[in-house]
Image (cartoon, rainbow, N blue to C red):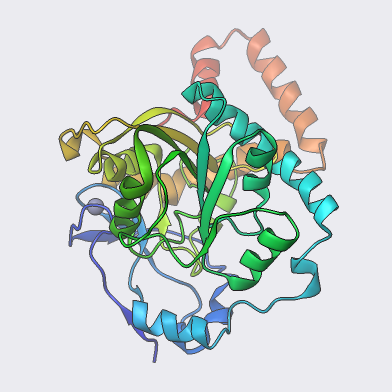
Amino acid sequence: MSKLKEVNCPVCMGEEYRIAKNTNIDLHIVKYGDLYSGLKKSQWVICNNCGFVYQNPRPTVKSLEKFYLDSKYHKHGKDQFPDSIEFVKFSYWYYQEKIDYLLRQSGLSAGSVFDIGYGHGGMLRVFADKGFKTYGVEADEEMQKYATKELKLKNLLLGVLNSKIENPKVDVIISNHAFEHFFDLHEVMKGITKILKPGGYILTVIPTYNESRSNLSRLWMNSAHYNMFTHTTLNRLFNRYGLQEVSHTYRGWLKEIDDLWHVAKYTGEINEDNLFKDSPAKVESYLKTWIPLRTLLFSPFYTSDGKWRRIFALWFAVLRSRKEKKLFANIVRFLKGNNR
Ligand SMILES: [Zn+2]
């Protein structure tokens, strides 16, 4: 018997939902032992009110806490704590462009930064090298030790971000692949507004299904995650706390695909909730029909084997030469991801 519980929409608290199509492969579910026993994959649904995609039913906070205390999930191997020089090199490769995007969109060049779920501390290390004062919170004690000792970072809290957080107010909050894991989004948002200066910025980098280029976008919907945002549903959550979008992109880079980068400003302005809404019917058909099609179309471009790339190039050349402009325009629209 699984120990899962039904929840309301974590963004709008709506009770009505429809089942979302995810993949049959859930690589993480075995790690959770009894929590999902009897199930081969987690179930994902689409909120019928705001279109948000979330795991439902899911484990209770209590059962998860017990599970993590028994530390069945995090088994630290030596490879999880790499040589610090190599790791800093990797961090520049992995974070530099995301940080540049934030600094460009916000106009900031100095100040203080807080990382929600800093992990090994790589992103904070890059900020510290730029002269930023760094802060952060992380649930894993071993990670905290590594970031403090090996990456020489200070002011690192142990725990989770919620309304009880105590930290000086900062100019920027960052999170890289964290929002998909948050159990109580509204507690996280209360924590954010408690430590972000009015007029400050937040950079959110998260996996997403929207404007997908591969089946990875459906694989993201697994038992290790609870939330799958688009820029619209993230804006709906942020709006309620006075944070407004400055910009977003689904095409930040080619190193990691099916990824959303989002910058928002703490303006204090709160608009009508329903200005930020994904159509549940469109989300349903996107997950079911469009993702497999887009995976098929994009896969040649996102594998190391480039044989299909050449075939596609030829195909495009034929289309162009026939001057089938309307069809070609539709394909371009499709490639750009504007089909919903
Ligand atoms: Zn909702």
